[in-house]
Amino acid sequence: MKYLTKLTSAHESKPRVIRCLQSLSVLSILLIASWATEASAGITGKVSATRTSGVAPLLVFFDSTQTTHTDSRLTPWRDLLFEYDFGDPDAGSTWTYSGKSKNRAYGSNAAHVFNSPGIYQVRVTITDPGGAKTIKTINITVEDPKTVFAGDRTVCVSSSGNFSGCPSGARQIKTSSSGPVLSEYTTSSRRVLFRRGDTFSHSGSPQITHRQPGHIGAYPATGNRPIFNMGSAIARFGSGSSGSGSWPDDWRVTDLDLRGSSGEGVMFSGPSSNILLQNLRLRGFGVGIKLNRFLLSTEKGHVMFNKIGIVGSDISEPRGGKGSYNMFVSGQELAFLGNRIVGADLEPVFRIQFLDRGVIQHNYIAGQSNTKALLKFHGCKWTESVQPCGKKYSEYVVISDNDFIGGGGGAWMVTLGPQTGSSPHDERLRRITLERNYFKGGSSVQIAFYGWISDSVARDNVVNLTGSQYWNGIEFGQRAGMPAYAGGNHAYNNTCYAGETGQRSIDCVGFSSASHSGSLAKNNLLYAPGFSDRTVVAGGAQSSGGNNDAGSKNPFVKSSPQGKSDFRLANAISNSTTSLSYLGFDGAIRKDYTEVGAYSTGGTGSGPVVLIPLAPVQHTD
Image (tube, rainbow, N blue to C red; front, side, top):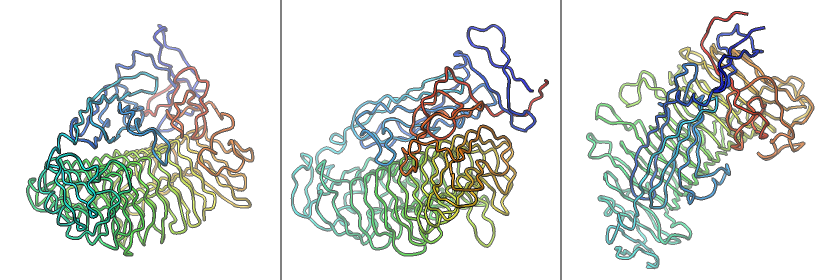
């Protein structure tokens, strides 16, 4: 039997010794520790905001990835809890699909839209595994658009001639053709508002290169979105030419119903920053929203698209066959929050070519087809020299609180890793957080999540594989021919289920086709009583414990779970193994870190006792 020293509390003068039930012969060992309150001095919180002032609606991206801790055994972006209180209770109560609060976020990155003017204090509470905390605050000043766009800096456009609700002093234009109006009035800092409920024909996309606040939106405050029958994109941001003078900054496009038959809905043609797309409805485009990194060139001094948010929008039904996507994006500090993204035509529903720091949260993504994924996320080619993302990882991305609904067209629901092709693509991802997502299988689904990634974590996800073709939950691996960088992946407290009977094999978490140095799998739960071969953790995780096959005993509150809340546990399942999961699937703070599965039952634990991955050290009996 091995022993480890437990760190002393504030009231203890000598270290206490506790019994560690895990083998210490593996490369990554575990320290079970209770930390003193004064350990808060070990956290150095570093939280940055992309901006601290601007006109409403204001998108702000928060980055806490550079936070440090004096304990070198911790990886702060993954092993600390980051909780954001945006100080904005009027943001709207909850997200439509996840049901989580819009005024809070969790993860090493976060983003928020401040829709109303005022001064907001954002509080970021950072907690370490022992319960020690530090709090960082950032004040955000949001200006009133009535002041910023006063008088004729606002333009109201109506096809019916109804200007009721148009801001006082605004210029008024009666026309059913939106293109010429936008081309004329988006060359300077202006707000162009279209009458809700009116219909417009649109052609001749305006090229927006202005670097002052601008807004394309709707009036009055409530009502159906204005409808645009599109012959071209509603706007093209950036020109692709050399020089930062043509790079647009600080624009918003909100509250529009865009209907296409091909082409793009919103197009980014050159470097752009601080752009918000909110409450849009896009249908029938070749690509709904396109941030095309292939139009960027280091030879022209271009930088990557950055600080762009797509929020609360409905992007569906792409047309045009191969090359058609709802969203096709690349960038840095991007936020995808609360969107409905549905349907595909020969391509993934949502494709990310490259992303350095981002959040993909509270979305509903469904409708995969033709063997393609719901979400395909990779990186730039490692050898790339022309585009401004060569020799960079896609990294520090939080994918949380989403609904991924499988269908009849794709074998893998969510895939993170390099593309296939005639030769392997060297496109690298690392430091990805996958947590509190709901995966629902479909008739062609074989794997819910497949990650050819490194140094990442999957925790507190619910995977419902009922109705799938094959039954594999969360898989980490390495694509053939790729450099050996896959490793250090952790899987904690995931719940997997399948309701079929008379089937052979199901895996909840897997580590395959790679060296998985430093990989951990703890406190995952599988319930699939109709399968003869059940494996909670398959493959080469270097340390595994506390994983539970429920066998034939149903652990859930419903005998045949269907909806997300049905996967709550009827009774807590605990063991002697602790895992680094702070929150349950429903966002409840865990009190007992020995709980099994995605949902927290509230627990009865009296203090933080947690698993910490360590570097190799010497121990004696």
